[in-house]
Image (cartoon, rainbow, N blue to C red; front, side):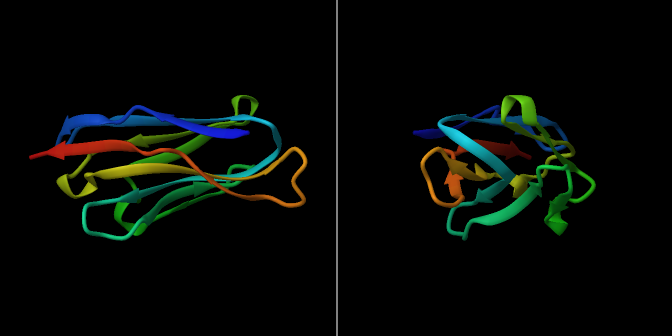
Length: 121
């Protein structure tokens, strides 16, 4: 079994900061890219940021310069530092990992349960 457990969401005022964490655990054979997605009410889930195993990053235009994704490979953990938060950043944030579980023939995408981020004006 593989689990992705997120933490760090909450309520913050506009202009504030939050740091999300997500740790992958369980029967992991190999862990590849990790990332964060978000889904606001009434909208589709969208990419926020991704990071490869060697640290190459990709960001949505809406968060460039404000959010920073990083990872700790030794702990199978990915982080999202969110600064200068805006009301429009309010959403449920989901952790994503492309990994291969022990006994699996190939890697696949796994998702966390989501953590709520609410930015008030």
